Image (cartoon, rainbow, N blue to C red; front, side):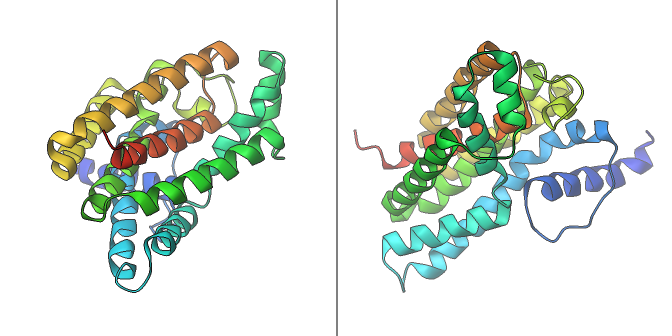
Length: 253
């Protein structure tokens, strides 16, 4: 690739990341099946934009609504702007817990229907995030919201770098698992760490460690139960990381 074509490729990869993760009106870019892995480094950037929009909405609503109502409005915004992409992954991953073996779990993940485990996971995720958003300290709301959405989208980088696809030839997992480059992991991680430190200063340590821990534990779980990762696994870890960072914001020592 020539130096002259780098800015165009950079813009196209950024657009694909936003096109994949959000419902924002970005230019529709055609990309090859192997091109999605190249865009993973921009996932935390999409998280910054999504979290920043939620922070602005909360700031606009807080003078007119109570904390629970403004928190619920922010949650509604987050669900709509991502098209329930990560919620769908969480529900499918939870449903797979009902499988007796790896083959059955993968079949459940492939099934678009939501079972009892998935429904319970969705309810708990939505309720938990609504409560935590309402409880976040007002003076640190924007910082924790932005940090949460950068970190939760960062979680895809280490999972896709280290873990193999649970299915070799189908699904979103196979398009990024072990196809994410070391440079993408480093660039995305440095951006994520810098954003968290700017937003939270010294308080960023615990949320960052929490995101690493959630990614590590969920990665071990996926390898043990599925033999790798699928697109639903990325969505499930995303949701769990978001909740973990909110919890850091409301925890009272």
